Image 1 (spheres, rainbow, N blue to C red):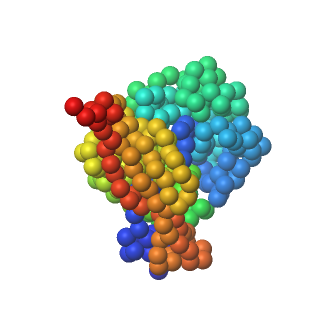
Image 2: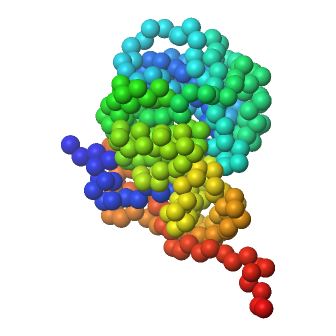
Length: 314
């Protein structure tokens, strides 16, 4: 049976520049089944889900539900739930965790401050603190969004958990069903597609060492799609793997063409031209959808800029 993932893989659709955009992620544990719009179609109180959606709107915070890999029978609401918040912008990357018996406590968060990278609101409202365990490996498994996420994501999440990856969680939605299994790694916020267990373990080891694995990478969620593609292109050109070494500092233009400025913490700067193209021939963006030509981010050029003081004639 043909799926959106087999079509995407067969057509060698590029991964770079396809990650979901969020500077801050807020994750709430919610066991049991999830619907297509999980915040309002799971066993979480739908009124709370709607209130959280409204509170996070236009703040840079993306909320998702998580659950441990395995069977998802309904055993009623858990006595306590894990809650995580992570900010992914280089220079202020952090991951904090908390436990709560009352998920309505999340409404006490200052979502604007959280989106700007201030963790104090999370710590004050939920008793949060810096996460000291393994990095989080979030695998999309929401089959109600797309069957590929369940068929391919759930076995990956289960394999990771069975092999001792303590940070393995299932997550409601990461976008890009056709790249399943899809994965988000926190705290740095890099997303991956077509993930396999052995590669995920390498990615997580890199996170522990402060490195980014670029193979299979869709981009950093801190940036918009042109910036994601540009940053990955600079990493490849400069052979730079340090996680927080690069930042997207400016993006000029609009679709279908941008000039993206990427800066290194050592002072180097690159100008990257990114063009939006259409993926051809047409393919389904998700299972059961009509054929379409999803946008792709193509890097046209990568140029390191010479500092003005060095460019002056002798």
